[in-house]
Structure formats: structure tokens, C-alpha cells
Image 1 (cartoon, rainbow, N blue to C red):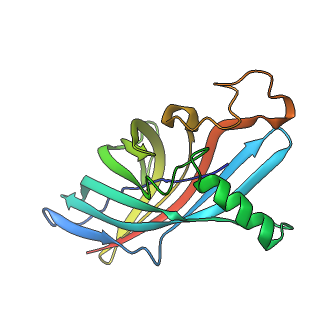
Image 2 (cartoon, rainbow, N blue to C red):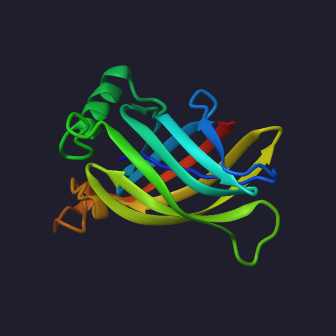
Length: 198
């Protein structure tokens, strides 16, 4: 299945600088998002591209962050799969069965909370925000490791989201009975690296 969109996701960061209200832009070329979806009989994985993003830092902490994901950029990277089959799977993921990319070609993440992760030390933070996919918005939270030095922010995280909450129904046991080995699990796994510069 997919996404990631993250997909996510997405994104935030923190730093040790003193600047107030510093605006930073996401470097899409240095950032990456990968996705993995699992089904009863196996799994698929691929990548998707961050379109653009802006972060605002105040006193070394993130105050705002908005990240856009280019849903048209979703790719399938399964090893051993020929290009024709990859193309068909990509087309299916772009269809109304999954992400309705023609109608919703952008997914977004908007930060609502950025806090040090409890019980941890170092550059570990808990990020919460609103994830919009396929025109639907839900809140997600996930831990991330965030560092900042020499005017650059780098955030790394692994997370998952329940696609059924975004009305992505195809092959979902949350909506359909008797799917057997055709069932696709609801959780979509996302790994991302986000780099931003002032």
C-alpha cells in the first residue's frame, strides 16, 4: 500500500540557536520520504517527494511548520518487480481506490505541538500535527530525532498511520469482511529525513 505520505510526513525540528522567529525552508533535494504497506501475502515499498515546506524557529524551538508532499511523485521500489508491474501498482495507488491523486495531488502536514520527549535525553522530541491526505485531516503524533547546527536542521523519524482514518478503503478489513489473503493492513509505515536551511 503506500504512503506515505507522508506523507508524511513529516516534519519538524528544533535547534540550539538564539535567533527569534527565524524562518527556514525545507531542502527537498536533501530530504526523503519512504513508505511501506503490508498485506497478508507480502508487502510493497517505495518513495514520495516533499514538494516544499517552511519552518519557523524561536529560541531554538519549532513554533510552526507546514510541509507539502507531492502525491504525483509516488514511486514503487519493490525488488524483483518489473517496470510494467511497478507502473500498474503506481497507477492503482494513484486511483480512487487509494489516494485519488488526480483530485488530491498534494498531502500536507501542519505542526501543532513540538515538545521534548519525556523520559529521554538528547535531541529527542514528540511531534504532533494535522495530516491531510485525500482531502481529509486527522491528528498524528510521533517521536523524532532533531538536530540543528550551522544553520541547518535535520529531523529523522519512523512512524505509521492508519489509512482507514483517511477513508482509504481498498482491501481494508476495517471496511470489508471475508477478504482472506487479499486483505491489506491499514497501517502505512513511513520513514523520513527532513533537512531545512535558514
